[in-house]
Amino acid sequence: MFELTMPKMGESVAEATITQWLKNEGDSIAIDESILTIATDKVDSDIPSPVAGILTKKLFNENDVIKVDQVIGLIETGAGGSSSATAPAAVPAKVEADRPAAAAAQAIELPAEAPVAAVPSPSPAAAQTSPAEAKSSATRFYSPLVRSMASQEAVSQAELDAILGSGQDGRVTKQDLLAYIAQRASGVQSMNSAPAAVAAVPAAAPSSAGSASMASMGFKAPAPTIFPGDEIREMDRMRKLIADHMVMSKHVSPHVTSFVEADVTLIVQWRDRVKSAFEKREGERLTFTPIFMEAVVKAIKDFPNINVSVDGNSIVYHKPINLGMATALPSGNLIVPVIKNADRLSLSGMTKAVNEMANLARTNSLKPDDVQGGTYTVTNVGSFGNILGTPIINQPQAAIMALGAIRKMPAVIETPEGDVIAIRHKMFLSHSYDHRVVDGALGGMFVRRVADYLEQWDPNREL
Image 1: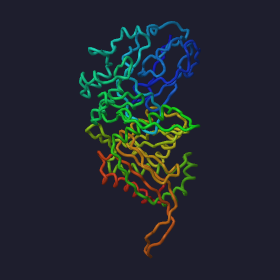
Image 2 (image 1 turned 45 degrees about the vertical axis):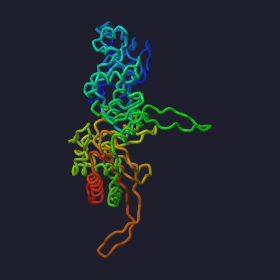
Image 3 (image 1 turned 135 degrees about the horizontal axis):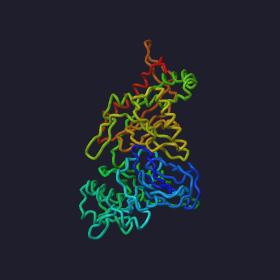
Image 4 (image 1 turned 90 degrees about the vertical axis):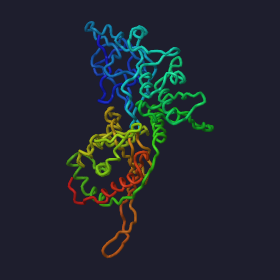
């Protein structure tokens, strides 16, 4: 008997959600054939079988949360028994339905999941013997995760008992507690003095008290009028997470946006001259995106206080410069792969990294680590023909830049013989930043510095 375990999906991934079993109990399985699909808080992945045999037991159901290295199924290989015969007893017991929303690729980078998570049990017997069984107060059960979060956030037992739980038998889930913490921090009170349960609130670390979505805090948009012929479609998992994250970001961060127009004529002319030779030599297309990303990296070095995150009442000053690049997917959704240590890359290296990440995103081949750890994000709204945009900050980062379309524009050029009007290539840069930690002077100087690097491009640069 072979134990199928949850593989390690990346350094920062401790758990995942089962989204679909591709095989049923009793089905034959070939080596490397996919058995199930899992979702981390960023991407979906298929889990292949390392052996051939018959799936004899599923230890978890769809939408259950599983940890790395946890046994999730048993496969009969015909090679005799093993210690896996007792595998069900080794699986953690059902502690609570504290499941984060099943997550997939999205337009923004979600906060990292808390390192501890509750997982359901495969059998009643395991639930009776597991030491991880949920503890209870005088009147209700609380999972270890909920109790740990409550302790860290100084939520008293009386407060816990007053929260309206959305879990099984009215138990308080992680989402319920996160919503309550956000309510308490903002002073918002519901009629029942307890947060409304929301099924798809993005998971957040307990210390990020302000990260619950507006919906979880009792705010609800009015229902739309339904007209004859209208079609109603439920949001897919990715769109739900994007919606929650966008609302949360606008609620958490007071957004300010500064705009600068940049003359990129020298860059356009330089790229037109070198792109063919570069593609022949490197096998890579030279787009404008890596050029702009390089300018952003240089500006972050000049203004490192942009490369920060907020953690409660503390500011985290990041040493690495990890650039997120918003990428459109064929489904119409967006995802933000991250180029790690972008400040260490040459322009050729940045070009290869940008192209690789964009291709992985569009082919749904990103790994969980590819969308983790961003410290600043760039989004290219110009690729859709937009001249500018007001992007929403990718939490928990403090700023994001939108690149507008490059257009030919008449402009006044100063020459020794006097001012003349000429046709120039221009674009708008939009910089949205969190006014809690980035003031207007810093936010404005940063985007101006990016424009300066673009306008001061060396037309004789070698690539």
